[in-house]
Length: 195
Image (cartoon, rainbow, N blue to C red; front, side):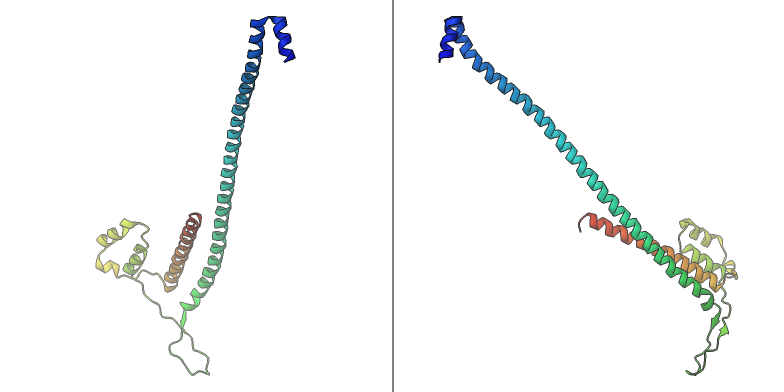
């Protein structure tokens, strides 16, 4: 109260009272303006932090996806290598099973008698149907059927049993690889969807 009396005596009544009233108002206004500025600035920092947090979450999701993709590729490479080894073993048996046969079972204590396997004739029509069934060229089957005469389909193609069996094993290996890829892809999609 002494400071107020001193101000009023030095500045006079109207100006002294004005200073006494305006000083706290200016202090309050200044404080509010500062808080507003700090609050606005803090809000900007919060938005920046939230943005960086979102970027971190996005990077983590990308790392999880990259890890899942790497695992998927690694699993495929391992399965493909195992399948290649299995089919190599199957191919090694082809010459044996296409060149000899046992005409009739002999006595249990006697070794089996192997005889040369008679040549099997595969006609041009047989080979054509075999190839058309692969549908490498969907229009080829209809064109081949329309363009050949029945007699031409019955000529010896020169294709051997070994070639037919090798072709079948090659196609089966491709089929197995594609089936494994599709199965792994479906499993990965289900895993990502949480099923």
